[in-house]
Amino acid sequence: MTNFSISPDRPVFDTELWIRLSELPAGAAVTVRAEQADVAGRRWRSAATFVADGAGTIDLRRDAPAAGGYAGTDPMGLIWSLEPGPDAGTRGAPLDPVRVRFTAEIDGVEVAAAQVERAKVPAGLVRTDVSADGLVGVLYRPAGDQVMPGVLMLGGSEGGLHELDAALLAAHGYAVLALAYAGLPGVPPTLRDIPLEYFGRAIDHLRGLPGTDPARIAVVGTSKGGEAALLAGATFPAVRGVVSYVGSGLVTQGISQSIVDGSFLEILATPVPNWTYRGEPLPYIPNVVTPELAALVAAGGPVPLRMAFEPGLSRPEVTAATIPVERINGPVLLISGADDQGPGPAYHEPAAKRLAGHRHRAEHIVYPGAGHLIGGAPYAPTTMTTTPGPGVDLEYGGTPAGTARARADAWQRTLALLADLPGSD
Image 1 (cartoon, helix red, strand yellow):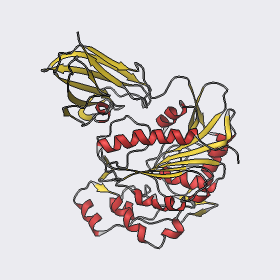
Image 2 (cartoon, one colour; image 1 turned 180 degrees about the horizontal axis):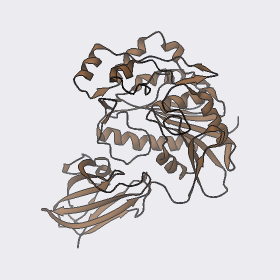
Image 3 (spheres, rainbow, N blue to C red; image 1 turned 135 degrees about the vertical axis):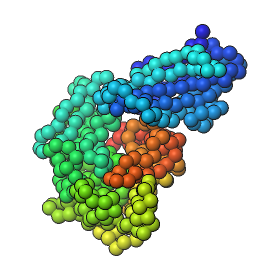
Image 4 (cartoon, rainbow, N blue to C red; image 1 turned 30 degrees about the horizontal axis):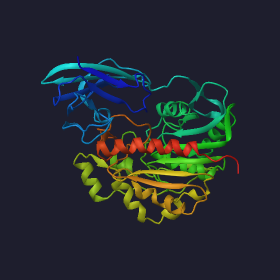
């Protein structure tokens, strides 16, 4: 009987799977399928066909598929190549484990099946809602009385907080505060006039928690949160490390969320100061609506926002909008996708240049074939490169394979930076 082996048997979401088949006919063409449901109940499916070796085995760490949804040897290829179907079932909770069912077929006949449950919230963590000092967030940390570094985690302009990534990161030995700064009760409804002092209070809150090392605090942010992470690091000396996923070394206008009934172009072009400090709005680079962008919107999109960002790099506001990242009191990791259709790598470059010769380690990693959706934990489907926006679909760029590789590597680089945070000078 064909044997399906998947290890570990109860993995955490950011853990690579080892998928093997044995007791197959030597040389048989075997189609391996994966299926899972998302929180909306929608089914996602992938498939790839492999050829069993002379011993009748297939090992996804060793073998590349002969055909299917991905190419090349990739242990998690069946996961990131999952595509959504039109069907939907029972809704789930956002942090429920993800159950993935694998099947193996020969000539259309199922010969083996297995299921694995990938935990989004690792065991052994303590979750605490945070509302002190006007903050809105969720803290995850390993149980016990050990002293550990603290991490402030910031999401993007979509609002809310990145609770999944906070839980997964905490399991590696950190007290992680996923902080909302817009879009939830208790914080502004839209991304406008957010005081940097709010992030300062969150940093102070982390430093004051029992079991958190106040000398080792980092900020990790994605997209607009990556910009905010660099601003926080440059403003508050207690920050000892920063990771900016697809963020910006320049303060950008972003997209107005205050115009509910306006056209997409009106929303895009309306000046919006996202951040303030000491009561004054920070200078920013405005979006530029070109005739080409307007024509693409009129044609129904999808729209790459990079078309609105790139012209801003030549505007006179650049100098005033540049973040003084050289003030950051620790290592800095800038993560970009070469095909990011948001601000793109060019918006991280001013930060990379200012960090040249920085007394702490500083890197700008640009991943080929990767788009904007490379922030956060790895091993999720990456086949969706567009999402609905205000009246038009938005294009985020990248290939599924390029984005998947970037997510996996960037997560490991983030863990490496956090493991090497400097302490007190």
